[in-house]
Length: 96
Image: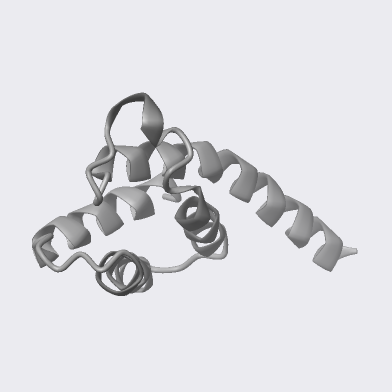
């Protein structure tokens, strides 16, 4: 029974974090979409980010994920490391 409760709690946490993660990803906007076109641009990363936070990932793991998305998936190399780290800290604060 405790396992089920933990899963339900984690799922609720995920559902709460998802819109907030979306808001922060859209503000970070690493590819520079901006405006109305941005509504779902980063959703493939939002879900994973929210899941990581709901499961208690630390800032280092979140930063590693963001860095991988930015550098490898999106192929963007000119975003300074300090911006990636600050974005990861902002995401982590959502789960505090």
